[in-house]
Length: 171
Figure 1 (spheres, rainbow, N blue to C red):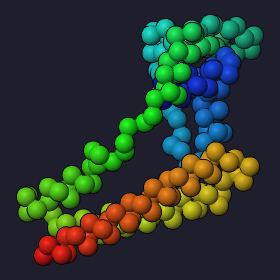
Figure 2 (figure 1 turned 90 degrees about the vertical axis):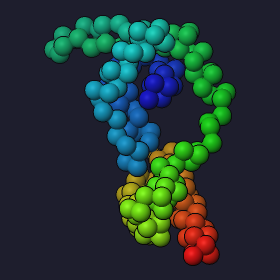
Figure 3 (figure 1 turned 120 degrees about the vertical axis):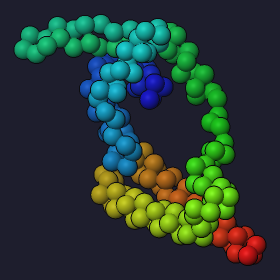
């Protein structure tokens, strides 16, 4: 979340609750909603590390609020983040570890694990389809997020099918 908040602050100063709302509006309901407490803790860490600076702003009818802005070091950190590609996903996949280790334990059947995981992916796919239908059509970023998640799920379902085929050949 650190770099996400820095990216939002790159367009201008904001306070924590405003950043929470910006993330929710940008990403829609498919993305896990950020906890405002987590946002303020992260902002505190970013400030301590010199990536942002906060300024207390007086409000007449409310408690003071702290407005944060990006420092040059924060802008540099964002540049590095945007320049670096993300690592390959799935190399350290928890489900695959279950699948690989199950025969050694005698506690789980690999085909049963695959079937449970397939059901989970299909349920998630249905939930994402419902979210896509309910999401504001004008929020293209949220729709792209949902579409990306669904494409990943479809790839995971295809991979599960491949695993099952391989394991059944070994029997």
